[in-house]
Amino acid sequence: MNNIIQQYEKYIMPTYGRQPVVFVRGSGCYLYDERGHAYLDFASGLSVNNLGHCHPAVVKAVQEQVAALSHTCNLYHTPPGAELAKLISENSLNGKVFFSNSGAEANECAIKLARKHGREAGGATKHRIISLENGFHGRTMATLSATAQQEKQEPFEPLLPGFQYVPRNDIVALEAAMDDGVCAIMIEPVQGEGGVWPLDVEYLEAARRLAGRHGALLVYDEVQTGLGRTGKLFAYEHSGIEPDVLTLAKSLGGALPIGATVASPEYANVLTAGLHGSTFGGGPVPCAAGAAVMRELMAPGFLEAVQARGKRLRGQLEGFQEEGLVTDVRGLGLMLAVDLPQPRAEAVVRRSLEEKILLNNTSEGTIRFLPPLIVEEEMIERVAEFLQAALRK
Ligand SMILES: Cc1ncc(COP(=O)(O)O)c(C=O)c1O
Image (cartoon, rainbow, N blue to C red; front, side):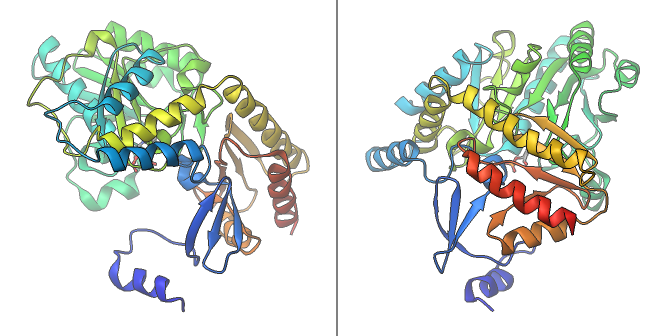
């Protein structure tokens, strides 16, 4: 067996079901293995490589920054932190940003912010956080407590107290769960790891209204949906229903680890000196990468092109539905999924690897598509052809 794979098995904890392939290089929509074989990437590092692999603007920004200044602690200021925070704030909630290193950390910050605000506004009993069944918010103890998936939670119980779960898109259940002890409603506008399930606009409206009525914060976890993935800079722009707190990570650093928690002006100063922190959070190198990513995403026509590509891929998948090869097509922009009539998604993903295509399944019944936002038409055609043949078998 390949030496690298053997070393992974010997020295790395078995927390992932890895595919038997070793990548050494990436460029655009392709990854290259040790023998130089190109793999068309329709998973984008699970929505991290949204600009493709080694985007020249990101590489340049990182190279220049790492050579100029790699780290200071957070007791000082650096230009990339200021620039990225301004870009995020001015294009989202016009508030303030806390930088961390991952999606889970971005959500941890949102949870702490909501708890502190709740305590100040309604006393120690205003601490409950409502999240959705089948959602995903991270693997740390607090974010796992918000992740209402029993198989992920159970081995680590007891979880943090004060989390309550309601079914997705069920306004009556949300209304019944809400009272003045709730400090936040935390939701993904499109559930990602749970299988790509967009929330109804009416549901988001209800969440916004109920949060307001009970003095709770509406937190959108846009770790996966944010930064162009759904064809808008942020998924909440599809409905126009704004959150109080927005969390970002994954593609923000153009492949470098960074998370961001954005609070609207009203809640921008809830977390004050000494209450939250991160040694590496907001470091100059990931922030320089993030600023390069933001500038690319906001280039004229970029997001419109993402929408057109999403339509193209969706059209192909809907064709498969008409043919009876898949039972459902859903998602937004370039965050799409199909359900299979039989539970064999893993086999399809394994088969795609043999064809040098990288696909991802969220369960045995669902294949998820997260191609780079720069994906080209002939790449969509190639994946569609593969899928049609694989699903017909
Ligand atoms: C919606 C959402 N929130 C949070 C996370 C956790 O992010 P990370 O793995 O960077 O901690 C993920 C990761 O898949 C995610 O999809």
